[in-house]
Length: 165
Image (tube, rainbow, N blue to C red):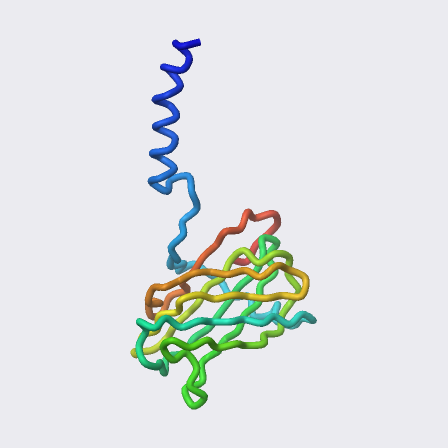
């Protein structure tokens, strides 16, 4: 028995070292995805989502950049909002929360979300939460500046069908 413990102890240490090194755990930081494909034809739908975006207090005071959003489920259902920004209405000011109603196809549980920024001001969202009628709220914590010209976000999906992301 003691011999088994002696052999298993190093294996346990190795497992937790790898897990702490985030090789096993999912990435918790947003990632760029240059191959991301928006499926705008899916936006004909009968579900409405509430999207709440909290802009970090360490973001620029305001942004005039174009901000787009895409989210979806593991089955390839995708909701796309081509333009959320509106500088005249003071969206995405630092320390603020902006709420949007977005129509799109009905989804299963939302497991990925990407933001796209185009412009020169810069923008740092703190978090994005999506509320759907048929799904639990899904929150994606950013707290980093979104790079210009690339889809940037999270994909925690386990793909079950053909996916568009």
